[in-house]
Length: 303
Image 1 (cartoon, rainbow, N blue to C red):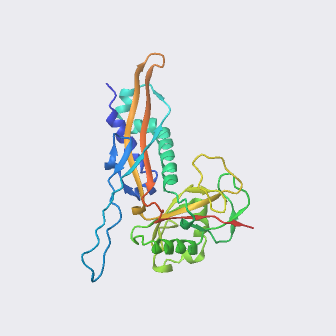
Image 2: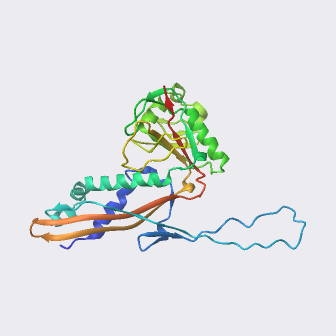
Image 3: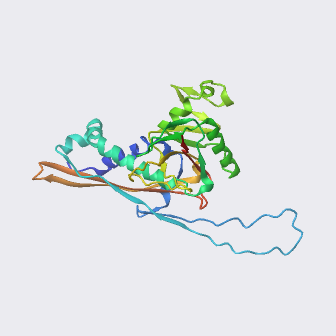
């Protein structure tokens, strides 16, 4: 039986966002992907303007200049894997999932890490600092204590998005597990009627101050410069690094999926089986140049 690429491709795509639910909360730009590698979005410039009770005629005429949005998707590839019985594996969903489990998980994880990096605020106007009691720093390589994430910090993120006119419906917060643990330790949040928004299910707060709360083992990390700089996934840790939670509205961030391909060397004689590797093109961006609609709540140092 020849390799049926569509079978494997479907498994990769269907599970890409399943293991990282936060990526579902974004504007999808798949339809603008060209040749599987580049996003090109025809983008209208700002509105011409509106005047109430216009008293001066003729009105001034302005020429609108449209600015197209173009950005390249990143390429993610797995190391080749040997599959000794491709016919049997290909036709069985369970066996196929078993073969793909580790590679797919690693692929999805790296895509998710860089998606967060592409959404991460990079200007001081979109930063807040945590204000809670001291907790041990949990960022990569961190030493010393940091201030924990509090419900007041979540409220401040709401206020910042309000001032930026971000829509109130559909807001999302992605919180690293260590910060979520501190947030959940607040006795007020154990009361179901707090702010009329808390819905405790299995010990997890699902909604607070208009945000759907999602949890992830890690989210983002920043250094401790006067204006913190976001760290790339896989970067070396530092003693002063800080974790950050991300608060946003889906209209403020974008994701795009391009080419998904499978490469094969079928019947490799020296390996006595078939060799497969996977390629995926994916990327994302902040949708506004000023970063509005996205807030990073970064840990502050504590004694």
